[in-house]
Image 1: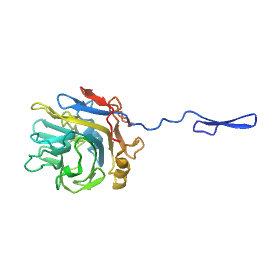
Image 2: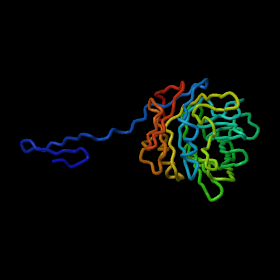
Image 3: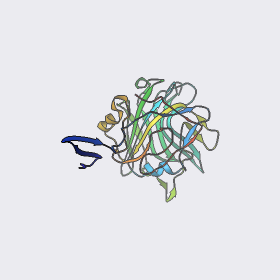
Image 4: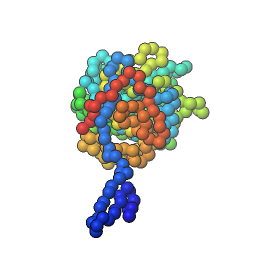
Amino acid sequence: MNLGLGVSIGSQSGDTTVVQKGLPPSFSNTKSISFDGVNDKASFANNQVLPELIGAGDFSISWWSKAPSFSPPGNGYKSTLFYSLYFAGNFRTFVIGAIGDSGNSSHAGKFYSQVANGSTNYLTVTSSNAITSELTNNDWNHFVFTSSAGASSRTHTLYVNNTAITLTSVSSAVDFSDFGGVAADFGDIALGATTFNAGSDSYENIETDELVVTNNVLSSSDVSDIYNSGVPKDESKRSGLIGYWRFEDNGDDSSSNSNALTITGATFTDDVPS
């Protein structure tokens, strides 16, 4: 007799035999992606993928990062996720998850994000204080950044290692999924690099794991669940999931959108949050 879920019950000489088969494999996080800080990056198929995924409404992004230093001197900003500078008639910025270097005059050690097209500011977010005391260099740290789209502006929250961080957040517009019917182009939005189409790119010495993007605002309890006391868990059933990059030896997107990242130079390591 088959009871479903791959469980069969049979009988031999009056004994009951239980045979389990077809059960899904358990979640296993064995790899992360490593960028060498010289020429490695991981890019979307085109410049519009991420703005189209998150630009029209609410969104949240969760990721794990490990770096020798999260506020190294002399770099302006350390990118833990995305940092694209693009010039196309005006200056466009797409920055999610930057941290000011130790010598930065206004943002030393502070979290910084900005999405803007010329004078149109979709979001500018700065932590009120340096977040370096919440981070451990050369170890895994967890970030969650959320954006709530109101009628005419956005509001934001940030969590670092399951701790809510006080922010200064301003915006003057909401929808950056397109520019008046024209696909939004913020340049080469890539992990592991600061891209700049009017100059040379720079690169980050950083490891990244378990990147999750949703089309809703994660609550503090959601964040605690994802953080899971510092051990990543399966997010494939997360409500509102629109992107899920696990970096298990590839740049595949485990969400239904299947937006695989193109890996340039970066390698995969068995160093993971645990």
